[in-house]
Image 1 (cartoon, rainbow, N blue to C red):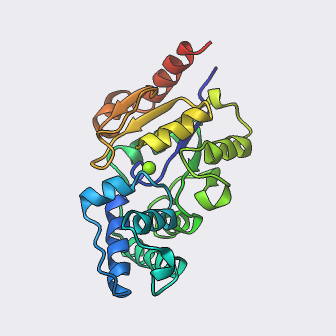
Image 2 (image 1 turned 45 degrees about the vertical axis):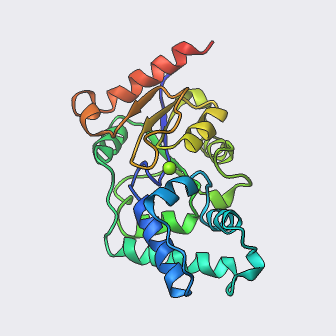
Length: 239
Ligand SMILES: [Mg+2]
């Protein structure tokens, strides 16, 4: 079965946005006079929880606080974090990960369809388009975390992307950076490759077709042909 579409995760996969998210959380906490500061180490643990609001809620619980004790509603705190995050993207503080541009260019030249399946909110993805980071390519389908019921590791975003693409999972390949993302794509039966980053390097990627540091070196020689080879290898493993 031929590969027809590539479905991409956003945070940590298309862009190394986790550090910018962490910065925006910390800035928002400071503005609201909260003495919280999420270090890289803390944030690595918090990344197990997908979704920004859910992440703050988890931290509150972890710190044995009750949400009612917060002087401001959690939604307001998260909204300010999102605003800070958007401002920085508009400033041009976020770029594509190494090798991604080449793969996307070649994918479109080879007639592949492109889709996004992310747990982040739609407004975060829209800001990436507005700032020009993702706007050079035609993305046929964009599914965000707030458009489905359950976030990753549930398969909802991927199932919705497949529905909108009107494709069988066997005609797609997913690109992810995290264990939660991998579980989500595999639960939707989509062959998946992983590009790790500092936050996800030591996670469990059993079931992935390939695990890479990034798409830079790997795609230099074979380019998007790698994806076709990975896809064929994944399909050969399933009946
Ligand atoms: Mg990710």
